[in-house]
Image 1 (cartoon, rainbow, N blue to C red):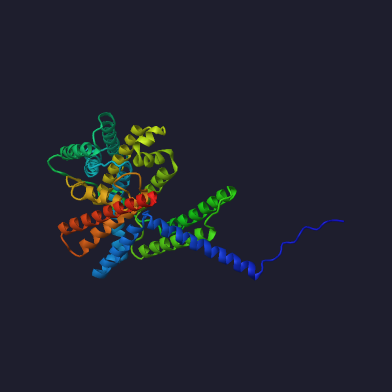
Image 2 (tube, one colour):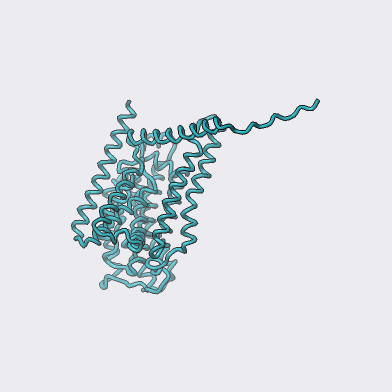
Length: 418
């Protein structure tokens, strides 16, 4: 007699109800995990997101122009240059180090670009390469001083700040300013070029797709290891919320000029740096050295090499920020890199969630932090308030961010002892 294969029974109402209950329990479990993380001091990017919402609400009430699409487009243009500098400072902050010369490095980079391109007639790519190379060499110098002579990075980069500023003034000469060709692609990139809407929507949908694919891979690996997972519904919910937010942002910016290419390139670098910090040996070494340098050394990590690379990356990104600033302003001048550039870049990284004490932070903190800084600057400018008040408010926001970081560290330490 031939045995017939057992037929799969259709799902009953009770089975579907049980599945819905399990999904609801997984979502509730994910919410409880998030709540427990916040209670334990692992705030992540929650403070900066809440702060950005509060800042946007206050300024939009005081001046409705703040949330106008074209004003937000201009905000994104302005955020890219400082964002690059903040992205570099994240690397040295992860080690518990500091670089006080990033503003001067960006100014010198701007001056090198102008001299090589306008005065000496080199092609734009060569001029940019020269500026970025100067940044890398500066980072090598800081790393050498830190490793060879144990010179504190505070002192080394403070000396570098003065030296780089002097070089900037010397290179620019008595005129003190070089105007870049306004019709050049570099200047148009910093002032005019906007992404096509179809490409903006495509890139807005892409993160949600990547999140779902990544969630499926994690669930598969955990299933093979006989471990529980949060469930696909939680992943899909996160992807839907993220996609909806990004698509709405693109739609709203499209009511004005659209998404600037300049800002899109900055976000691309943030994504690359996020991968490098989270998924590569170099990135894990940065967190290890920042958490405990001696333990990292005993585990086989070359601490000196990691420090050297962090300073090189930081100065290189500062030089790139100077190039972006020059393209935005269409000039290289003695004022480039001065003023509040240092404050804004370091404040952006810290406000975004990177710890001044080392061992904690992310590339995304530079993105969120610079949006907060530029939102404050833009909002105060629309209110016609003086720059002195802007400095005080930005300093207060930075102080609050450091206090939150200190309280979070204390909370994590107390939960660890418990």
